[in-house]
Image 1 (cartoon, rainbow, N blue to C red):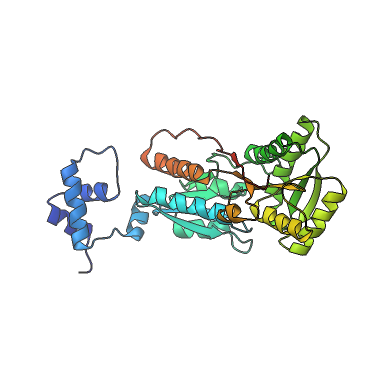
Image 2: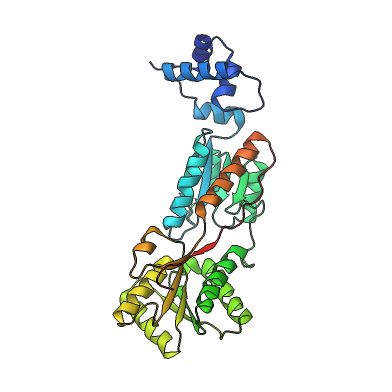
Length: 326
């Protein structure tokens, strides 16, 4: 059957179209019995009714989309997991996640005006004019930590500083006095790498350790092996890597130099990607508890949708996962 409308569902259910709308959009704060809600949902399913996204957008001023703006940089398992968890958390309320990799060639305004999202989550700060325009349009705008205002790129992110601190404190607790930092060669990762390295440097200073030896490490065995040789010449025995990908490259460089990890060189990564536990040796790493963050973002969107108080931030959830590499 085609062309089924909310009026058809209302007639078959014996209720008003307003009641149908409230039930199928998950509207809270409306006195509708569970029996009526069940009858409306079953009737809609039997008739094959699907609410019109276009009509809903015209009526409410926005669609049922949550737009996630990703910066122009590599997207690894951590971001993929966050997006999956976020989509799961919003799907129960009829919201869908739309992911956009931002490119400089297309103005952001062209996108959000075309899809009229319910909310926009930025994985990097927005330009002031974009932020103001979206909020004037009634769109909920969030950063990945749920902040109302986007962070200043000139200020270090506390969560990223904490990552570097966890790496150094773990290595220092195991007797490593000379720390190296494996910097990513992808220039697009510079902001995160800068803050994590700052956390490493500050913690080395706090623990009266020498300044860390920073070397770039690409995802190439020969480059990684050369970096390992250079670190060894400077008596580095513990390495903090930008992330697990870089750490895995370092492990490959250690093996290429016929050294042993962790005896000759201990390594700590970041992200706890699935392959980390399968590395040789299994990789010690910092987990960012992405599932907790995704559920918090979903709760923020739904709180705004329902007009209720926003949940408190659950904390960064960082913790070190100790394995054989350190």
